[in-house]
Amino acid sequence: MRPRLTGMIVALLLGLGLMLGAAASRAAPPPPNFVVLLCDDLGYGDLGCFGNRVIRTPNLDRLATQGLKLTSCYAGAPVCSPSRSALQTGRAPQRERIFDWIPLHSPMHLAQGAPTLASALKGVGYQTCAVGKWHLTGVLDGRQPMPNEHGYDHYFVTQNNALPSHHDPVNFVRDGRPVGPLRGNSATLTVNEALGWLKQRDRRRPFLLYVAFHAPHEPIATDERFVKMYPEAMPRNRAIYYGNVSQMDDEAGRLLRYLDEAGLRRNTAVVFTSDNGPETLNRYRGAARSYGSPGELRGMKLWLYEGGIRIPGIVRWPGVTRPGSVSDEPISGVDWLPTLAHAAGARLPASRRLDGSDARPILRGGRRIQRRRPLFWIYQRALGNPKAALRDGDWKLLADADFQQLELYNLADDRREIQDLAAAYPRRVRRMARRLRGLLSELPKPPAGR
Image (cartoon, rainbow, N blue to C red; front, side, top):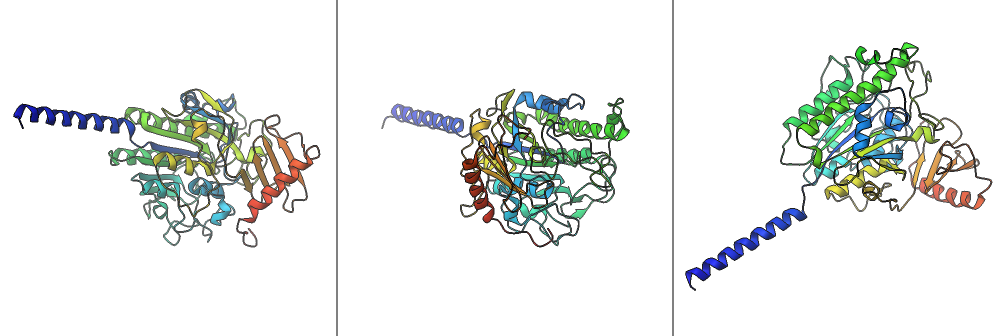
């Protein structure tokens, strides 16, 4: 073969290879990073972007303008540990035998080997980190599975609340070792750890960062500069609560600014939400600073009315969410695992029933999530009469423990749950009650006394 012809063929093959390589590069963008920001007892009405006219939350308000605001965002339960289990596993918490909040030294815990969001992402090469409040074990001393046994490469967490308060906590554990007394507010310490991990991570690999703030759960303590932002708030405990939300917002903003400065914003999905509705003022001895608001919703934390389970939700995902958009399609804590895992290309165990669904259709601007099963909740120790609930489309059914008293609301018209329509729609009530009974029949029963 002539040298010139040979050279032409080689050049043609090289050019074709470059074209194919470029096409493959365009067809396969790098997997997204994920940052999940979870608050503790933050009410639906506690942020400026969700209607609060007093508490200053400029960073989260800005995040909402940069992404999608979810106005029908739900927790997986009206109380902390079950809600966190739902977020981590994509399943009703009772399937994991998490029936209630987990006291210190309780035997209740998320079982070894339970697939989680972190383990799913780690399986496709993600680096993973959890900081803040864990609350899926009774202890953090190795007798129960630690966060690293649920897929987190690095963790800096407390078992439950920061103690003795958000100020100078003494109960953080880092990668199996108690840290001891620390100086500063737990929100600041949590974000410091998150930033430290981000700066030393392997930059060639995608990451999941789970940031679980203690704010604004009791026992609340707030840096004075944030309390002083509310001189008109009386009594002082109200100003301390408002300032606590603002301090959390300030720390969330510090983390978000780093994502911008490090060039991570374009390929990082940020999810912000809460674990349940706001605590009731003075419900227990240490709740004297619980001035959270459910907005116009009925009920608070521990209730199955909307105020106990509907929470703020914001997603900023460049290239997926449209800036300044709003969706009122129901999305719940059980949906985050299938949504993020599918976006990352992770495979979920086919034999393990999920209660959540892939929510990317609404994140992209669609109107509906395709659900195989409706959203449902059960909490045997719920305040008020209803102990179980089911939402199907615009309709929500509430049932007492024996399904003797049923309530029906059309949330599209009545999100305050004022007009009970059960008597007007008996066939719908019967149909939804059968569906709810069937879902609950799949769940383990709680042990006596829980």
